[in-house]
Image (cartoon, rainbow, N blue to C red; front, side, top):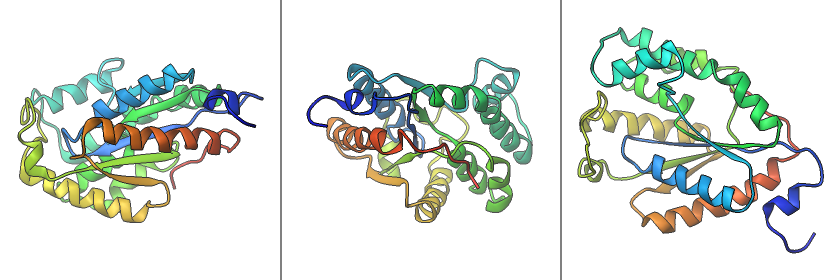
Length: 222
């Protein structure tokens, strides 16, 4: 098939959407880049939904997580880790239905953040990853990596629980390990690049991805 946009190339039959995740340390640009990608895909006629995890508003679990992150409530590390995971599980069926209906999901943080932040507190990686097994596996993860000293200069840095440079260095180290382990579908990008340059890299990868996964079954984390 020649010409046309991504929608033209994959619209011959009912085909699923792509599951795209953005990961990285706090203030690395995930929200900006995920929003720009959603706008790009929607402008091209691709049915696209933007999600954020933790999803803090629509459930009691999300509200407890929000209280924890804003320092209004303290919980044991194991408890809050399992609540983060449960927050993803409670949205699983809706996400699956959206993907199977042809909607692409662009997600700001997912299981890998849950693992990275809890491992950075000193808990075992295998224990942290265990409750994520069975959740949907992303088709691509964009890992935005940058020098952490730069992040501290960004607006409102330090207002939430985890926005401490020494802790973020530990988180970054875990993300690097996850990237090495999951490199077949992770894309490590320099978050210090200009916003538009970074967006162009992400958009090019994503548009190819839509064609590649359209006829593939959804996979699970194992």
